[in-house]
Amino acid sequence: MRRPFLFLLLLCAAPAAAQVPQCTPQREGMTACFDGRLCLCRFQPGGQMTARPDGHRWDCGPLRPDCRPPDAAPRPPWPEFLPPPQTLLSPQR
Image (cartoon, rainbow, N blue to C red; front, side, top):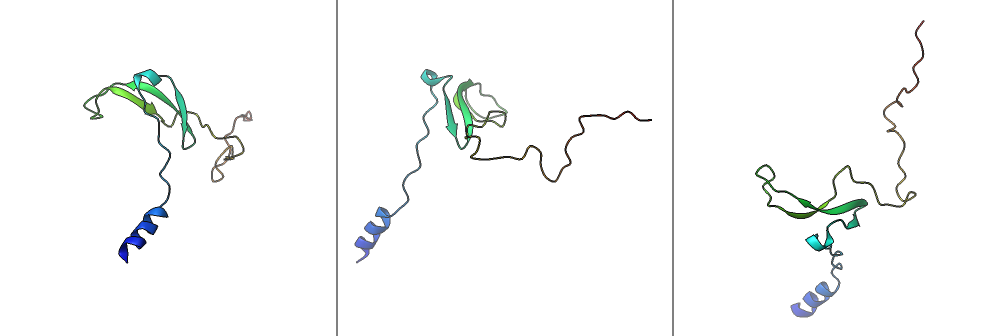
């Protein structure tokens, strides 16, 4: 009685996530969109501070551009809880 239930449970399981392409020396310079960020495959040196060896890795840092369509995630030009910056200075009298 347990086996059919287990089989149905495995059959109804969520599909596996899409596989991320490997960043290899052959793909250096290639870009890919991961989670709305345009990532770049590049060589990153390792070091003791990062505890990583040298190798090719995806650079998806905060300075990388977004790759979502413009209307998919509209962002306000300035956070609502902050006043807009004062770009014009009025002379003091």
